[in-house]
Image 1 (cartoon, rainbow, N blue to C red):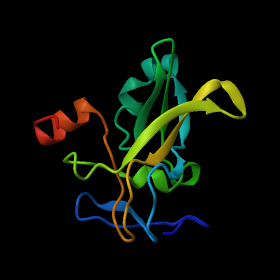
Image 2 (image 1 turned 90 degrees about the horizontal axis):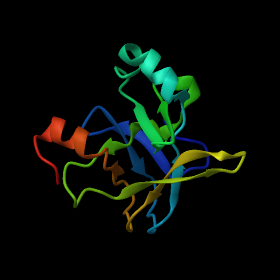
Image 3 (image 1 turned 120 degrees about the vertical axis):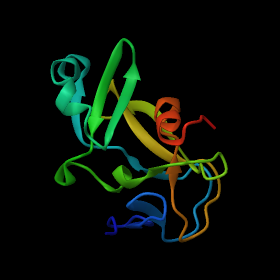
Image 4 (image 1 turned 135 degrees about the vertical axis):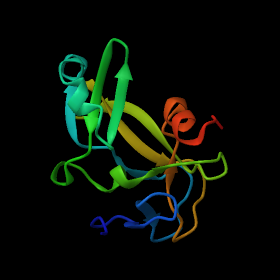
Length: 142
């Protein structure tokens, strides 16, 4: 699967099922994409916690005053960013999430993903899913 006009492809990952790979060399601070999916408010999440928290593609966004969740589980309501795997070491880490104001709704934050260093073509992209995830999956925090 290749996202139209993007230098990325989704392919089998040696880390976990699918991953996002570069098609060409990328520079530091290049835009990878917005993490998209069905959005839930904090209240929605609390009311449906059992169903929502079982999603493989759930991201928490915002601050304690303006917290919401993006669930990229539905293939028809998301994009390639849902396949970016979590780094298992600091060396693997090559992308970061930047929370920024949505240009269409300034009161809302969106999760934009950018590269954090130069990345060679055909390399897999990795994020840090956070200390809770890393400790649960790896038994340690890097």
